[in-house]
Image (cartoon, rainbow, N blue to C red; front, side, top):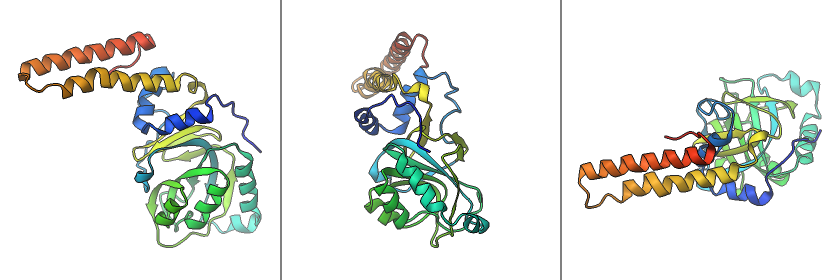
Length: 254
């Protein structure tokens, strides 16, 4: 079944988002969301980016649940992989695979490596966030397939899809199919549908606001006494908060 999520952002806007790191996207998102920005919509557990040199990735979630330790899944549905691949192929890209591993916290070998990376890249996926184990990092990088995961493994697991196109829990964060994901070495942000509109404008504003106030004040302190520098920092903090609150009608400052 294909995703029926209403998409607000164009492909060009997604490419713009890819130019920013995930904390910068978060800074804009927290100004426009009604969610609790202190704990909602990002991973709550530690996740590792195995290709930080590839920069951020952005795409829509395709979801999968696996349980490598349970051989009964393979016997129950020998066609599960092809059914899952057809689901992935039916969804508009760019896509990021969000994998819940039911064996967590135990890991029974890697479920993702060179073969899966190339297969999913061909199906329009730009990367993977797997709450489990991966391997073949260099070959997945060569395929242009970015990976965030819990750990590495030498051996592969006997993986069979259990469920797909369903809600998953990945690194402590519930994710629905079609959710917009932004991820890098800091972790990932699962952006609710209602927060797509205005997101780019907000993150551009917040990044410019930091540069024009807090950062410029801190870097322009040459020749100032310590007291003069502290006064400049205090003024810039006030300017930052004022601009943020004016733009977002009581938005969140530092």
